[in-house]
Structure formats: C-alpha cells, structure tokens
Image 1 (cartoon, helix red, strand yellow):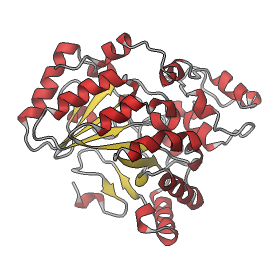
Image 2 (tube, one colour):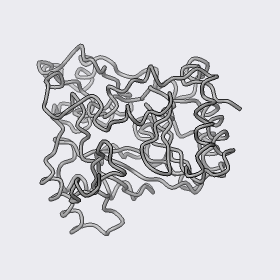
Image 3 (tube, one colour):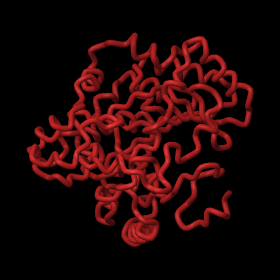
Image 4 (cartoon, one colour):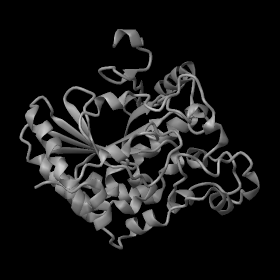
Length: 345
C-alpha cells in the first residue's frame, strides 16, 4: 500500500474532530494575539508582516499570562523585528539538511535511521524553529513518488529506525498516519518508530483513541517525542492527553530547546523536568539553539548552558536530567555539551 502525499492527506481529511477544528482556528495575527493578552500597547517591536508567519493555537494562548509582555510562552511565538536582522553565523540551513535530503520527503543524516518529512504543516510556529527555511515545497512528493522512499528504506538493512517528522507528522489524520505506519511496519529490518510532535502539548485533543491504537498496535517499538520548553506548557490537559499513551506502553520523551528569556534559568528547567515526569514523560534532550537565520535573539552562550547543566545535576536525580546537546552539520551524531567538536567530525 502506497501512502498518499502530505498534500493529499490534508486536502482529503476535512473532518470535524476537535483537534482539527483547533488547527483551523489558530491565531495568525499579532495584533489579535496581543489583544487577547491585554498587551495591545506593546506592539511597537512587532514584525506584522514576518516572512515566517505567526501561528499559535488558542489552547496554547490560554496558558500565557495576561498583561505579561515577557511571558515565556508568548516569547516563543510572537514575531519580533529583530528576526529580520542579519547575524553572523546564523544561516538558513544550520544543520546541513539539504545535503542529507536524499529523496523528496526523506532525510538520511545519521547511521541506522532515517527521517521522513510527512508534512510541512505545524500547529504552532516557533520563532526558533531550525526548519523555518526548509524547502517543504520540494518535499511533498505526489502519491506515486512515495514508492522510492519505501524502496530506499527496504534496500538498506542497516536502517532499524524511522523518525516521523515535519512540520508535524500528527497534523495528518489518524487514518492517513495509520497507512504510513503500516507500510513501514511491513519492512522487515525496521525495529523502531519514533514520532516527533509538538501537537500533544499545544493541542492536547490530538491524542485520540485511534491515534493511541495505531501507535501502540504497531509491531515496531514506538516512541513519542514531545516538545515542551517551559513548565507552564505542561498543564492538566496535556497530562490527561498523554495518559492513554503511557498506559498503552509507549515510550514518552521530551526534547527542549535552550532559549534566552524562556527557560535559561535552573529553576525553570528543574520544574520542567519534574512536571514532565509527573505526566509520564522522561526528559530526553535540551538542545542548544540551532543557529538558524532569524533566531539569534534566543541564543544562550555555551558557558551559561554548562552552568545550567551542572545546576540540574546537583539538584535532580540523574533520570530527570536531560542531555544537553548541540546538533552540528556533517557530524555523525548530536554533540554532547562539553565535548570538543573537533573530536567528533
């Protein structure tokens, strides 16, 4: 069975499930967002016509604090004029993914695993996104052209894991996602499936019974990697949404990005780890910022990152301390904090 293209998936599935309604009703206007937060007078530093448009679900807006211009959740999504400034060392493709983009829809960068770009759509546009300049238009193969992707995986027995990414792979309907998972499970040498998604955090309704069934029912050992950067992202609705996945036996992990003005305090990161574990999610990675054009104002110096890592080690049990890493173009793996880059290339 050949999966439909991402473009077809979104065009054909206009159901009325709550999560799909939530994706249609996102905030896309900066003035509206500030008005919702009683911050209409704080618009002078905004980019009202950003090249990377504003997009944020209303359920995520509801977790922001009204009247706080420096709210850490707001800072992650609000376009700022500073994004248009050119900064040395910040580029459109900081991880060299263009060279690893072996086929439309497929990135093969690390040994033993490939990443599939199932969609260019996200529920939320994070201002620090390392794929904000990614050529999604070139990675939406028509239906007949997904066959080479599966052939590529089938021809390489060293591949044991497939990562579903995007965009956000959970922007696909349950039915379309099931088609993809079933097709991958039919490849004998694959052992693991990893799904990277921010949707269970920003639109918790996305975790439907059908989604739980298809992920838990695959013969592939399946992990869901969510993305939360601040403890206030993990509210009761997120915990409730994740519970069926945990009960079904999925491995739940979290990755964060270290962001200036958002989570660059030890207290914040420690609370995030505690909240994640309370809802059954293991802290996995804290990524140092990928140096993508438009995101320089989020950068945290490596010396500061080292100090934060040390502070977490001193106050949390080891299983609650995420690994601090930097992704580097052309490296064979992510680089653990403190390891000289020259030793890994």
